[in-house]
Image 1 (tube, rainbow, N blue to C red):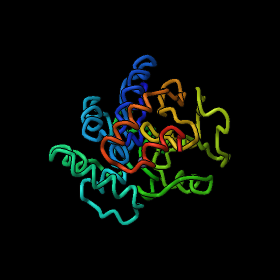
Image 2: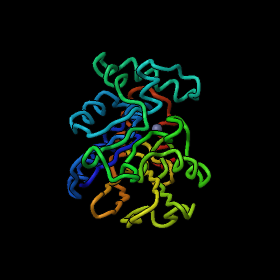
Image 3: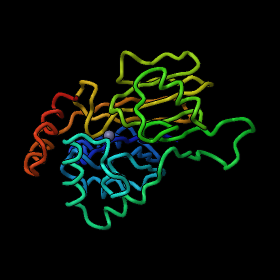
Image 4: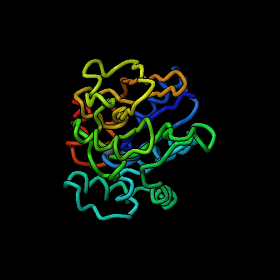
Length: 255
Ligand code: ZN
């Protein structure tokens, strides 16, 4: 079973299209979506619709989704994020807003086999937006990662929110890989793994290419993938929409 992992799409239709084309070539069976479908980018409605068309096996909300749906005020948002969330809410249809409002809160276990696993074995996969203990928490370092692993009910925990790819493997408490963040990683047979495949719509690790992943639960491999996309097209849409210029500029820097 191969899971396509998408996180932090952020209304970037050009990036999502490129990722889906690339993912088709790699091949996958089911789709997991880790939240933040909207915010920052200029095609929130199209990105919601395209994501629903994928018929995700499991999908959870991100902080932008819930604020956009009116479930929470934008208290922790900076001025740019606030401006984008207001613009986004105004341009979505009521059905699209309802879709965002109905997204589940993470963490969520992903059932990959029979409902009852072997006794004492954690479920194979859990998805969350920020962390398993707080959906809005940013996991940046090994201390955060350790706390997240302890809180997770699954062997493999997938998260997003930071827009920075990274893999943490217990019990070494080391972050892997420093290099490369592009390519195939053989996951350990035992022990907990915490994975961020990076952001589809707004990468922040200095590499402007769209990021996503494919987890093969049978082969026990993770492909961290990057794909070039039409950045100029996404920037033009942001500028046409009158969204803050910084949102366009950061895409080409990958920050
Ligand atoms: Zn995000």
